Image (cartoon, rainbow over all chains, first blue to last red; front, side):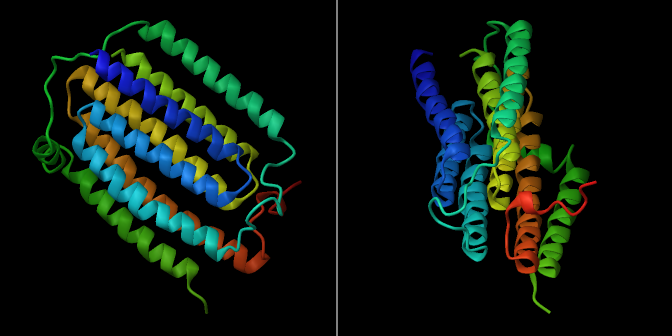
Length: 164
Length: 99
């Protein structure tokens, strides 16, 4: 249990600091790399939560595919590297107040509701086979809907982005 | 481990994502901040799945990842289209509907 808490502390610190740096850095490529750190840290946290398939999907889909999309987006929009374009708008103090209020109220209500409730450590551990059983039985209709959604997004992205 | 460790981390990530969406001016950065918020939801789903001993939390997290991938694809296509038509992706320049 102690080792798990130590690893949680390290990973949570990496994730939270990288997230804050991501939304405050002035270089957009650095922001993308901080996002990689956030996603990798979350993938490790999924392993800590015994969600091995979610962790694998996180690495494959987010760090593999989505990050490449983001880097292509940065490249194709010729985003200025460095301080050429001020990355943060004039309304950032208001945005900080909104985010602080949202986070503060959420954390207060979480502590109020869940307090020191322990994560059940003797519960069942679900392997990838159990996840796939559930996806292809109980959640077969949402699964098919997601596949249609991905097809629609694919066609939509091509239609939007092609030149003619 | 406490359940709240994961929930509070998710809340911090979500608030950071909200700040990014509201304060950043670059369209790609806004999309990245939305990814941060979706990941905050995922960690909550998986943590609650472990807490209640059900596999549904992991299944929903995977669905969220799939939907997020579709969202990024379409969102970046829209940003590219905006860049092609207006030669900027500064979201403060897109105020045509301001009253």
